[in-house]
Length: 350
Image (cartoon, rainbow, N blue to C red):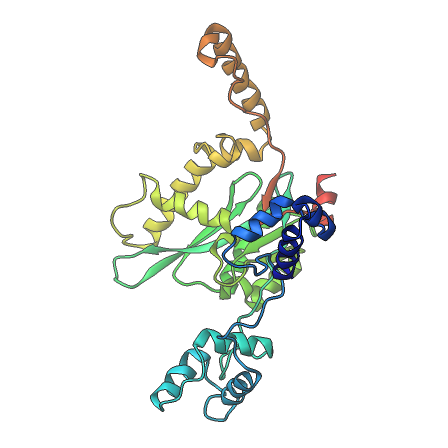
């Protein structure tokens, strides 16, 4: 069409017509005319424009052959990445691997071939929000090295997500659902957990999902929550706690010689962590202060100290506000964009 328009305008101008009028009749501008005249090609370059078939385009017969070969008994369990080389070894070339994939995709045949199971899509754990202690606990098991190479003690540890307080722990020789259930019973009794008050989050280990553990949770009225398989950051609070435990300067440089020694050291760590460690996730107050509700006054007093310092040396702040020590009343586990609290959480917070 562009070539026809150029020919008509050229003929009109040669017979004395105005170029502007000729362009106006065809509905184009003189500027468009000059661009068409200077262009190397008059093909429509806009996205989605109709174009003449490329000489490299596969014919319907070639596509049909590719599908037939892919579905033949010899190749039906193989992906194109193996089909194409095997054909080449026989002196046959139909198309590239990418062309095979494209044609099979058009026929909805791009899937896993053979007996391999398709990847399983596991939904993200339900987003939870705690507004006070005793609403969400997180627990896990980590290894403590022993003097015997290849053998480890198992440290069971339960953490309150809201306050970061370690609410229960034990060290054992092995990991079982029975031991985990006993630990949960003791922790719930010690912290006076009522039925339907608590959500317990963990990973997918066998002690976490064992029948004894699940029966214990059902008896206590505790709702279980689990991470996705092979997704470590679905249980971030327990992972962070174990990192603090193993990277603290007080962590033994050698191996534990006995289970009694391991228990004594963990007891000292828990006492320090709960009562002395200023946790970065809760505005650098201790878990015990947060758990007992004393952190509000600590943060208020801390803000007053900063404001006093600012008044004494205003030039050091240059008009900026002091550090934010405001109390944060919500802690989320596995939050999402449209986070919703569980009805049980709202009831407890009321």
